[in-house]
Length: 247
Picture 1 (cartoon, rainbow, N blue to C red):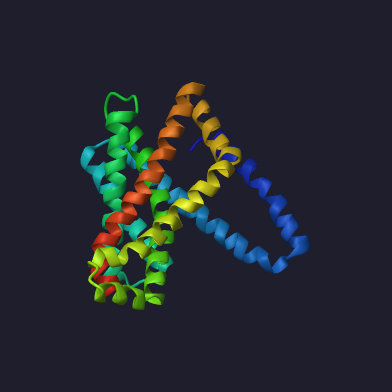
Picture 2: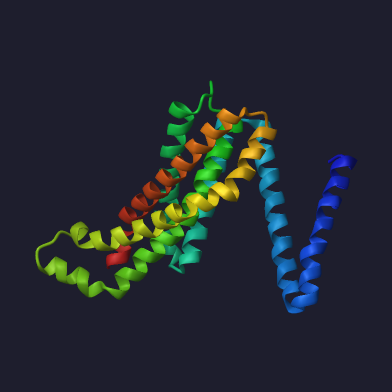
């Protein structure tokens, strides 16, 4: 780390005087949890950055695969904990769903869509990280909604089974609800993303050397990939978790 980078980091941290000052004037009890969350987030970002830096430097296929598997497991733990489900029952389906949904869509983007000559850590890590992060957040919504609705309306499932419906046919209303739980926020947030998140990413890509048209294309591919991977991850997870949910 250079002296210049340390100085710039300190100057950036000085901006925190604004939110801390506002909390000091208006809501002092919130300062402590805000500072704790901020420090925790900085530490997590630093650890993640160091890991990614190491993977970048080594640029070994097996190391990249191990990194991706570790991230899928971490994402599965995140989903199960957020949904407040039993780890021993739902961790494997959640991890497998995230791994399968992300790797299929990610490889499609890397091999068939993005204009790159070879799959290296420079492309694999950011593409998979974005897909995995979005899929994890959406899987929390979808799986939690599915389990909650099934527990509340178990009688409907039993009624459909008793009238000759197959197990998957009886689960269709719950699957539809969980699918809408992940697609509805995406549809609702697309316009907000165009005004808030996407310009930041777009500017970051321009700073990174992309031309405006290439930056637009990559962002479009990423958005489509995020939606596709979240739906596929949910489907794989529900297939693997069906026995646990319906027992």
